[in-house]
Image (cartoon, rainbow, N blue to C red):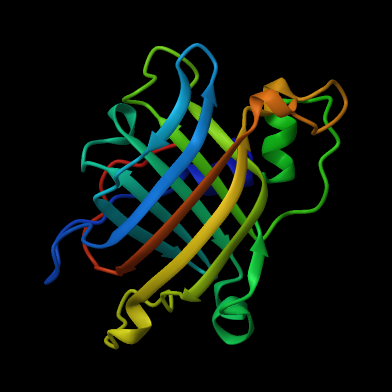
Length: 210
């Protein structure tokens, strides 16, 4: 598995701590979500689990409905690169969201992806669409962090444990892209918007998800 794929795959559930596990607030919605042979219409994730795992200068965030393993859950996985720079210079600034070039080429080998985006995002519907391919990747759009956890697992400041962000992205299946390109047909692309606000809670990691 290539590095970018592994990075997105490495998100872990948090476990234990003085604050309730996964506590936070937020929403993830689409006016018209398109998933082949599974979903066509309005979508509301109604998340009630929020967590993040820091690694060096990256963070892996999960917004999910329920606390079950990802294999049986619906949720959003977000990979953030350059946490220090975002906290120091880019809070309140729209950041590009897209699919890592390595993952583009893993899924669609004939594609010609551009540069590594600062943030990767994937919507997984393992509960709602368990019998179909149930992962849609953000291929464009932005996310704005107004607060971002420092990344220090021993952080004692409540303010520096806070993550707050909104996003507005296009999601789709890279396998639907035209041969040799990263252009997914418009009728197979969905707009996904969301908001999250939660504090980091340190605990023991559990089962990873893709």
